[in-house]
Length: 118
Image 1 (tube, rainbow, N blue to C red):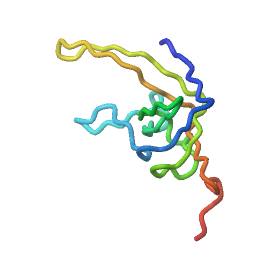
Image 2: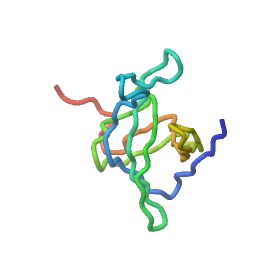
Image 3: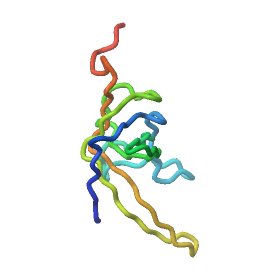
Image 4: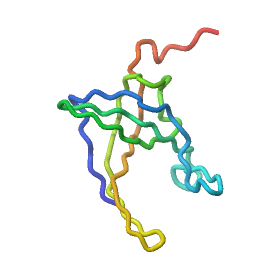
């Protein structure tokens, strides 16, 4: 599958929606995983601001690769972000778009990597 690297240098990135479990089959409650027996996949909606333009994009990432608390408005870094064009046919209708996948999503909030007090 073709992957296009996405350069986030110069962009402001912040969480628009906290991480949510990615569903492979919503109707039957099947959770998406990375490979057959890999970790659970999550989606994070990120506000991507660059050159005066803002857009919310949904990023897919494996659950263990999410670092820090990702509450709404938290600044983040996206490691290894790629865009993947896709196309499918469902009920005779062709659909296409671009999906985004990151190796990691890391909180840039001050103290994000510090353990929480008990």
